[in-house]
Amino acid sequence: MSGKIEITRVLEAPRDVVYAAWTQPEHFTHWWGAPLETISMDVRPGGEWKATIVVDEENQVPFAGVYQEIVPNERLVYTLVDLSGREPAEQQAAGPETVTVTFSDSGSGTKMVFVQEGNLPDDEIPRAAEGWGFFFDALGEYVTKIK
Image 1: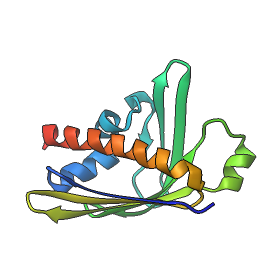
Image 2: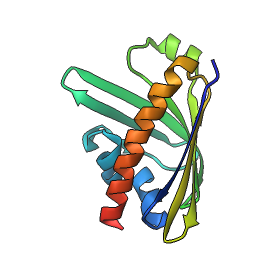
Image 3: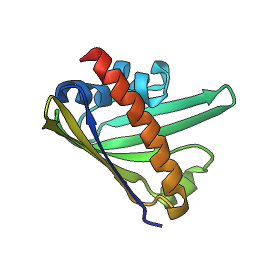
Image 4: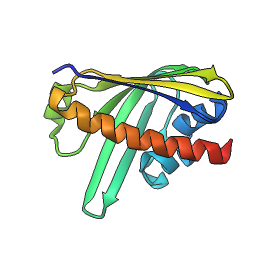
């Protein structure tokens, strides 16, 4: 198991706005599908983050991770662990995914390059990439409203 997802988007908002949408719970909640009360973000190397996507009352998907590298408005590197449906030993055995998001100027907007890699099984990559695509559609809509 060693899958990789890479998605590039150009968002019609300045880098600081797109970066804030990734690093501030009050913005993150609007595009990632997690209610604000389930989000915590300690955005610094070694800081932890947590968020739970609430599909409905019976379906909730908790995620967590640790920030590894922070370059404000330029780069985020963090781990990503899906905590749903696994025992702690299984979660640790699978290991976390590593997500790298880079932000650069692109015309009047921001070029965002997203890379997720690690232990994602190959058969889960298409579904995960589709999910990120939906998130990034929502992110694009959100940042144009707040820019």
